[in-house]
Length: 145
Image 1 (cartoon, rainbow, N blue to C red):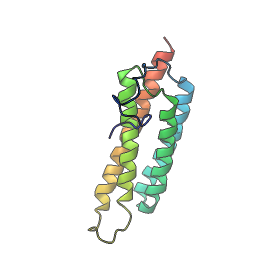
Image 2: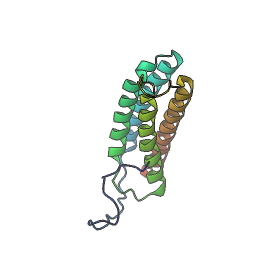
Image 3: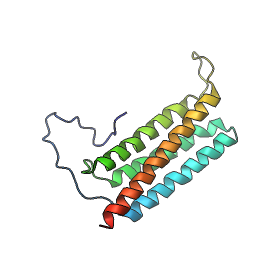
């Protein structure tokens, strides 16, 4: 899944935007990361307690926090590391939502292996946390230069 930046397709009618060097403040990134982390902890608690019906609301809160964090960054970041981390962050949040939806009882689909879904959910949460940490590290380093 590709980062859903501004929704435009490169190479279409718009001239390419110049990469933006402006990164958000480290404090803003840390604040959003803490919000993401708190929501991930809630999701992991639900997984430990086998509260599968909590997955979707938790994943939605994570998705909102991820979207807010991604919005702090320029649409066309200059840094490859920022682009890669944002892509991992947003694609993992989308993947998390689709994995969590598998816990919904379906009429026509075969029964879901909840244990497998839970492993996938935990992996997505880990990838989101990893990407958020990378963005904190990058902004801290860049803003201190």
